[in-house]
Amino acid sequence: MQNRILMTGQSKLGETVLSCADFDANLNFFTEDLAFELREIFPADNPREALLVAYGLRLRLRRGPEIPAILILYKDTVADGKPERSLAPGGTVIEWRRTRTSFELPALKATFQFAKLAEQSWTVGRAGMLYRDLIPDRQGGRFIASHIKIEEGGPVPDYVHYHDIRFQLIYCYKGWVRLVYEDQGPAFVLRAGDCVLQPPQIRHRVLESSAGLEVIEIGCPAEHKTYPDPILALPTAELDPQRDFHGQRFVLDRGDEGEWGDWRIPGFRSRKSNIAAATGGLAQVAVVRPHGESDGFRHEDCELSFHFVLQGSMRLDREDQSLRIEAGDAFVLPGGEGVAFRDVSEDLEFLEVALPADFSTSTIQRI
Image (cartoon, rainbow, N blue to C red; front, side, top):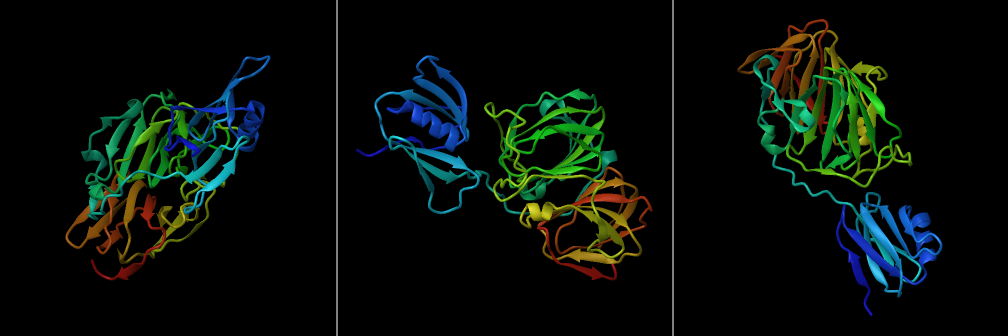
């Protein structure tokens, strides 16, 4: 008799029933060997049914006739190619497949973008937070950047959730916010100058914030799905800071801990993070300050070069335009366009988020 397939997708709320002759052996296998969490079991004097939860699945074990099956489970650490397999007592096959993202990456339409704080309005978004769009054209739908603020502090009406994304970064601009992430230990406070890399599909929750919290959030693609996870409780018991989430690792970058060095543009220094390594070269993040004289420059092959001015001011010269850039302003530089940063104030500091982590930049004398 051919094994029946009990699960062929990534169910988050559905319940799968597995009938097994040796109930005790299967209960031990799923809880000890596969790390399922036991949620309920009955009756107490002679258990015949148990509810187990893991990998986004609710599995109900029932004592009964052995009906061999194929149970398909998904996790991030399975290599591409032939699925891995485990065998449960009684003959049920556990087939492991790699979790996959479902988003479509829109074609990049690189343009110069400038978002002036003094000229923009705020809109009310999720959980009552205020949003300001920092990349109005979204680069063809490839990227979104938002300036987000919470005016009144206290608990945030959030829930455990995750995003189906390629890249996502949160930079704390002002105030503080308390967050908790899957497999990253207890909740922690993100303060001004800190940032987190949120790898694809990591479960997380915003718990509370200071009054006047402001963060900068950059995501790819611009439109991506957010899913609640009503099963997983945070913080998780397991601590796994090196866990791979679709080729990326979680990063908490403290602004007062990084080392400063020469930036790729002469006349500036930068404090880089380890986000380039954690994303496998997909992206880099740096905070930049002036340091000497600077010429014009051109990025030859970058996908995104996003900047948000944290403090101070400067003049941005393009081939056909000159703009005064001040704290709270943001801009995107498309690849191949010559620009220069001039009339830089001594206290200038800006955030740069760039994809990929490495790309060529050439110096030009005149703009």
